[in-house]
Length: 391
Image (cartoon, rainbow, N blue to C red; front, side, top):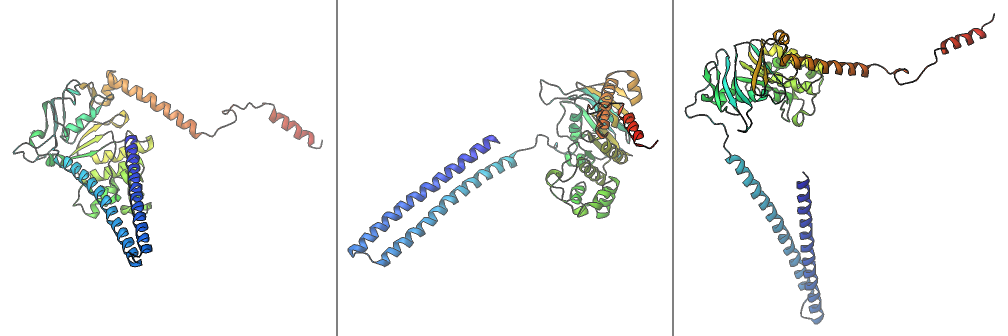
């Protein structure tokens, strides 16, 4: 931004100097011609009409010259923009459908990772032989410390990247052999950072399924618990969300994303840390909506906050690209391994935050702000009052 600002100031400064120099040159030329014409009138070789003609001709000459300079700058800028546009259009995606790829047919929604190895950089592997199953209609949570490779799993499911080895299959079909459009049509995702377009709330919900009817959109909004919000906001479904949803709170944006996914009604659902950036109260409300949307669907939950995955059918603990523990919440706590350590550490953080919240809600008292009171004051006041009473 600093470089852009510096170059912009330089450009406008050079343009101002160019315009000023052009004006000075023209003014000097016009003045010289006018002086010569006046001298000719005094000598009788020119008339007043000659003076007016030369003046008008010089002024009419200046305007096209000025326009040509501006026109050249606009054409030059347009050519640069067109070159950049064609550079973008000429880029081919890294992941392309194989010749003869067939549409993915999902009947149950059984997801399987089989010995998947992946790395963004060859010198730094992210996933090291990850193998797990997500049975149809079940919920599998993936937890672990930062950088363990949790979000990479969601990107591989969508085929934003291809694994270096191993296979990812849905209902026995290798997703590498299926078309990307058919694959992504069967998967719904509620991300951590919800992407909203600068349009209405109804438009952002309809993005999940363009051909949906108005009643379907209203039902999705009701299941996502944003119908109460839509009842008080001016415009309802036509209310504008602003650039990237800046007119909505974090919880409201997440509800719009949940409504969008409910409208899509996919057989496979991916929740990528959907509540990690919310406060505790909002997180509970959003988690209740997520529990409703995941019923009867194959669900993969990628979570940082362990409190959101305690009800998962199976929890996979990912550490340094490998699955180090697996099981349900209770069995992992009893094992006393990585999951138990993460759980205890998060409980300590939650308890500390709860104490700070309660302390902030309590009204300050003189004792809390450091004012010492004389315990004798109440009795002294009572003695003084008794002295004033008649015996």
